[in-house]
Length: 96
Image (cartoon, rainbow, N blue to C red):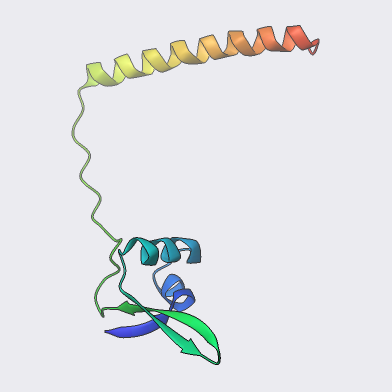
């Protein structure tokens, strides 16, 4: 197991420091707290394998054309409603 600081782990695995701290606190990553020069330093104990968060993206299922057409129609209705609401709001505050 390799010992590295939170910052170096985040950089190596292209994560934010905040996310690495959350992973350490939740127990998703093994860690060790060491006192150096009167300060507590947290080291992540990383294995020499892939990053633990890198999971495969599941394949997108084939969706039927009818389902997609129905979904687009619903979205178009929602957009029309939102446009009407926006116009009403603009008129009520005197912009349009």
